[in-house]
Length: 536
Image 1: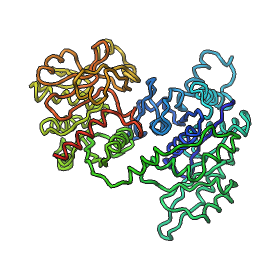
Image 2 (image 1 turned 90 degrees about the horizontal axis):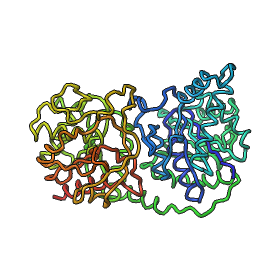
Image 3 (image 1 turned 30 degrees about the vertical axis):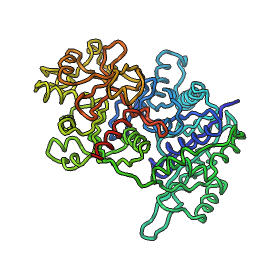
Image 4 (image 1 turned 90 degrees about the vertical axis):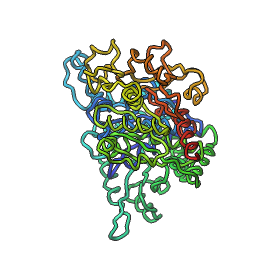
């Protein structure tokens, strides 16, 4: 069977929820028995988001194969629960770099290189590659940005070309727009959506469905108006009001008959009846009254919560599984260094210190780790959060006052966190990174082993510096347990304190593998410890 393609474009403003919509529809199609996969096309010129500031782009989501990708791939994996690959995300930067490399090699035999056909052909090749690699019967493809963006034009041209090349029965266009609310008159306005669709049609792409996002209830009169002026069927205009939880979106789309409409237009037949009972139970849990656990998230990018998207969702998964509500206090780590934010930190039931790069705010995170250790507050450190927990321990338990990471102080007398010897001569940014899946052997009797319930696990990594093995023995003598190590015992993966209710940190990023129906064991152990501590 030829692969069917569903393309998602955005209109009016960015960040209207294309990624969540694509993920939710992918779930509905998977529940009907189809092999689905999802791909994100990012029009920016950066090669990937790996070296971009989280303030610019939010979280970098890492896949099994080590690909550093857009945060929307986190939504895709959490909803569809299929592992994605490097082919599932590409940027204009990658496309242009590949075309230019081919030109330099002489692959085009001296021809003039143009956006059409060379750039557009490369984009089409990469879309086809994603379908082939994942063996998807249906590939859902999200185009980043909004219609009208200059950098999106080659991608939109590809959509126009593919409509004819793969056949209209094999392609479906979903346009996700925003209905602004005019406070003075109390009205929702459809005109921006009409203009957005007009611009899309001017490119040669006519949407088959419009998802009309809004913070307010959308009257049938407005739905009819959008259908009339945008030339789509009335049942293909789907109002989507903002929800309390992302996990309600699939249920809303199902109720609106979105999946059935798409299947009909793609000339498919469902292989089985969709069973969304688990999702209904999950959403019911979200809305149910339950005890609250207050978690202090101490980070350096807290002004943009998308920078910690997977951490936030992983806490929610774990909390729901334990029938509690997680309430996150977002604490800027640099504030702790100035004496600010301490009331919030001290009122928390648990503390999580997530990953990050660069020196700014690290001393505040160290202070948070010190507070958690001394006051027996459940603590979960992720990547940098583990390294800083070790630095705090070295300074205040081992008495190594100058202890640090060579990332922050290359001349520290006690580099408890350092580059491995074979990394030191690599100069390219990202070249020294440990990315993707690596195995971890767990120490019997440890809290980590108890949380996982197994002897060995595989986790996703994204970091450059490692625990310095020269200090292992000193740490262990003072009560640090290295409860997770690489199979060759060369790399520390998990550290925890022996005399603490739950002070566990991982060098890897467990948040990338947490799923709504399968919360990550370390997050479950962390929230469980917070729940028990609150009872006391």
